[in-house]
Amino acid sequence: MNKSLCCLALMVLTTMGASAQSGTNSPYSQFGLGDLAFPTVGQNKGMGGVGYGFRKGTEVNPMNPASYSSIDSLTFIFDAGLSGQTTHYREKLEKLDARSGGFDYAVASFRVIKHLGVSVGIMPYTNIGYSYYSKEVLNDVDAIIRTTHTGSGGLNQVYLGAGWQIIKPLSIGFNFAYLWGTNERSVATSSSSDVNTLTKTYVTTVNNYRLDIGLQFSQPLSKRDMMTLGVVVSPGHNTGADPECIITNRKSTTGQRDSLTYKLDDAIELPWTYGVGLAYQHGASFRMGVDYQLQKWGSLVMPEFVEGIDGKGDYQLKTGLLKDMHRVNVGAEWLPNANSIKFFKRVRYRIGAGYATPYYYINNGDGPKEYHVSLGFGIPIMNNYNHRSILNISAEWQRRSAVNLVKENTFRINIGLTFNERWFAKWKVD
Image (cartoon, rainbow, N blue to C red; front, side):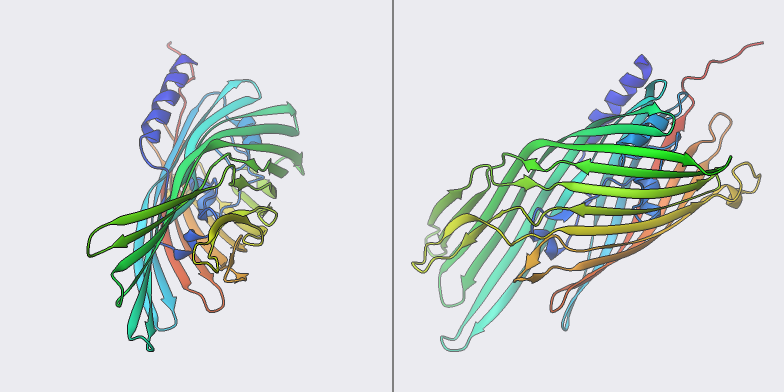
């Protein structure tokens, strides 16, 4: 136990030194709290992000903390991953390619006592990253208005979770996460006929918590077949964040700056989130699942600067900027023969797909809908003392589009390592 706790603490401190942001270049990350990230790890990513009903003693599944109760008593599991992506943007006749990526997640888990497992990890909650500009020609005054949009940041979460098997078919669990990060967005406007640049900078810093409560109910269908129902609920609450809007007017001839700061108290909320999933497993050779998630953003308010007729304006909370988000994922994994001497029969083959609606409006219309498909492999790492560690590799194609808005096509590569060692087995000497 002491060995596992020391290793767990070292892994968490090491990974917290890195950013859990996986990176984005999307202009859509300027809306709401940014691009939402989901608590998926290597095996989930290859199966389209499905996982509410999955429970397996040799892997960590932070999507449903009730799954921690299935952790093998002889192992300590550590899973870390990174991702890289290329996105093709298209708006009318304009085209652009951009790349991003980096450290993605790190999670660990082990069993404390019989039927009780714990997990700890770090992963992103939202991502923000974009930079673009637009031009408007004013023929009447022979001037060009240039507006530059930039944004960076996002929210990270480090969690501690536990799962307990109350009775044989029923397990419950929780993830308690510390949520932190800073979102910064700016809009700078300048004119070819004016020497002033007007910049609006929006800054929000969050230091709060998240809670996920999970349940899994498993029903045997036969000696080798199992059906599991998974449910996860995340309560919504106010984060206590105080967003600011800083308006700066800079005179390029003198370098003089005049600024005005607006501030709102306790203005950022997290939504109630509900997830349900059904998984089927046939021995160790096949499993599949389907998930549905609902995030109740529609009832929340968001800060927005409203221009006034007097030219000053006001920073205020507004309704009608966000909408409820629906997400459906489906995926499967096939393992031909775990004990075969042939390498390709020991590889886990994964496939998945998903669909999600936007959680924000753009110019009084819906944001982009998302479609994605994925293909993945779980490659066993075999040596004289370990045959349970897995190298997880998956490729994902994602499309986001909406009427009269930018269309995105993203190709993403995910690489993760599930390190699974039999650390607690006793050696027998003859």
